[in-house]
Image (cartoon, rainbow, N blue to C red; front, side, top):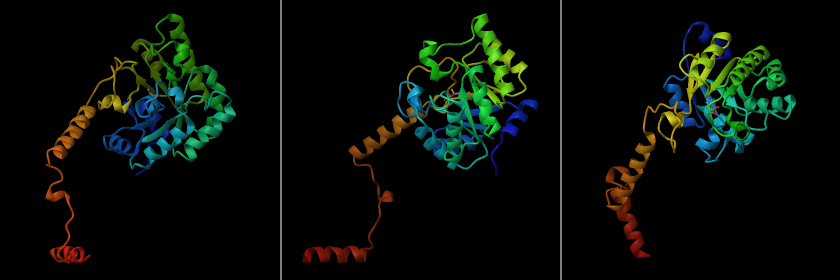
Amino acid sequence: MSRKTVTDIKDMKQKGQPIVMVTAYDYPLSRLAQEGGADILLVGDSLGNVVLGYEATTSVDMDDMVRACAAVCRAPGEAHIVCDMPFLSFQISPEEALRNAGRLIRKGGAQSVKMEGGKHLVPTVKKLVENGIPVMGHIGLTPQSVHQLGGYRVQGRSLAEAEELVEDALALQEAGIYSLVLEAVPWQLAQAITERLEIPTIGIGAGPRCDGQVLVIHDLIGLSFGKPAKFVKRYANVGEDIRQAVAAFGADIREGRYPEPAHQYNLSAETWAALQKALEEK
Ligand code: KIV
């Protein structure tokens, strides 16, 4: 059983097969998402908000990503595993980006890396690709730039912004990315970009015309807090299941229903009798 490669992912666009991507940050969700048939697992820097409790992804560092990626990769399965390059791990220079991407591959076990940003990243993408590291792009709403963007808002609504995003997509493809995440952009713009690219687009809040879709797994299973974004569709209510399970566990303990005989270990009658005797003699 081997993992899907970047060639397999690119071929899916040519064959018209929709690409299913979800995030994963640990062994159990990696394993379950692969058993559920995900084509790609993204070890997203959304780890910061979703699992580590930070306000923004800008707090996530390389050590966080390497540890999460290694856990995700330890789960068996066939999904391609792509790991996000966290804030400031690729912006300083192409050389530093190569060093950090190499760490995600070597220590994290990722097969490819993802970077947020437009055409200014062309030299960095080329550096990684020339050195054998496949890169997934990410444009539109790029959460690492939340302070620059003035909040988590839809991108590409004006003609100028939309044209700029089309240029970014083409420049990144030319630089060698193998796929492109489009986040929070109007669906018509996502369709226009998807039609102009040979590589697959993977949308999140980018409408139905992308070559694939991605969601943060905690959003889709109902394990996140606060009001979900407009594009989130919830397929389970794991958060409520956990709340009810812990409440039931607490009630059982407080009312003497747990543990039951089935949950405990026994001494043999002989050993128990001998122990009682020995204790009495002390
Ligand atoms: O980190 C993340 O979860 C992402 C997705 C939103 C695409 O980058």
